Image (tube, rainbow, N blue to C red; front, side, top):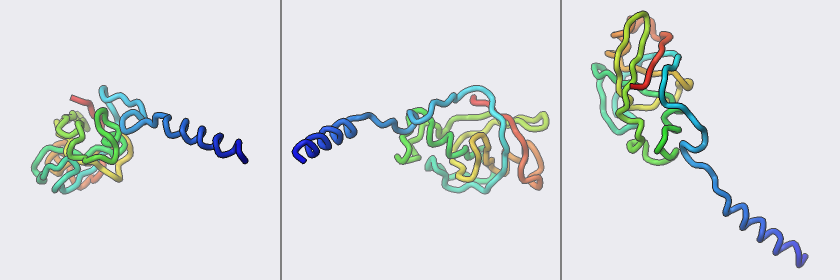
Length: 139
């Protein structure tokens, strides 16, 4: 019993001193190049970046997987301060391309999906389609 207490105290000290990766360090990710995913549209309002947008703004919500792992952002901190906010993407479908600004996150999107404003979506396709396959590039 005399040995057990010092042993467990030593183990606790080592475990508490071990660095645990936070935010962007959890997963290495490339934030350049071209990606493929699905695009949908939504009616924007106050987004995760703290910016209020309207249907006529050329904006996008990006997947929570990308939003929460963007370099310089610590998951769980104030999303208004995420450095991804304000970055631009070129989104393409059917021979058309539209430039959009990231102002929100999409909680239901898979990793490379985008949720576009009505203005941005309708520049690519009829809103009645609801969902289209897109490619997009970091600008």
